[in-house]
Length: 135
Picture (cartoon, helix red, strand yellow):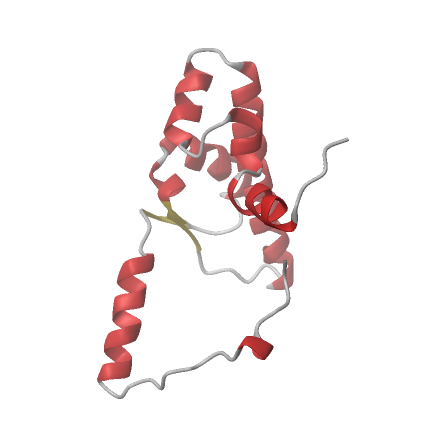
């Protein structure tokens, strides 16, 4: 039985879980290439991930009582026609789907900073005791 330190466990959970744990890569383009070359394990993991995303979206539709104006998919995987296709075939009946491929975190952070500088928004300082105690 392997024994891990807290630091090692954090690294396993935050950086080496999910697809990396199964296939050894963070790059979903590599995973898509693996599936295209007939790697059944890669295809299973990739399909399962799309299935899980679809399931989460469908679950949230119940919270909204089916009153959904649209579903927005963003991030790096939203650039993948293959991944989006797998999701669309499961949830397209719920509402129109809008795709905005790419990661926009830096733009969002910059715009947030700009709103603070313009006085449109106040800075929120999170004290350590206010943060959730996870790991």
